[in-house]
Length: 147
Ligand SMILES: [Fe+2]
Ligand SMILES: [Fe+2]
Image (cartoon, rainbow, N blue to C red; front, side, top):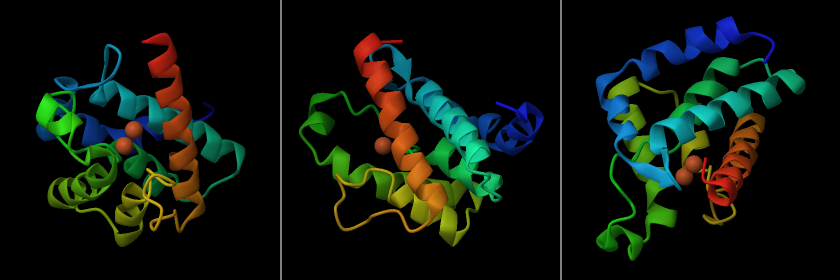
């Protein structure tokens, strides 16, 4: 990461938010919380964004950080058998709108992060494609290595 200071400025508001901190209580993969998973996806998205010279790093990083802001434990039996894979992008986008006043572009990027799982909602922006790929890489690492 070349511009860590910019990353810290963009992420500060969200990381310090009391409701976002609740995601520390929920496990995403292995022993990794949703909070730390989201931070890893934001970091990797930022690095990829630097590589491709993405200008709108604010939207990129905010959407990456909020992409799994669904605020429940999906490992409980009721949720595991639910349509979590399809429904959580909408829930995350709605929570992000409620607590962080996100733009339409940011909403769209959160909504599309599960593509191709959510077949009819592919990313519309370059930044959205970056988040989609970063999420899959981070998820694979967390699932395989449980760290
Ligand atoms: Fe997700
Ligand atoms: Fe994710």
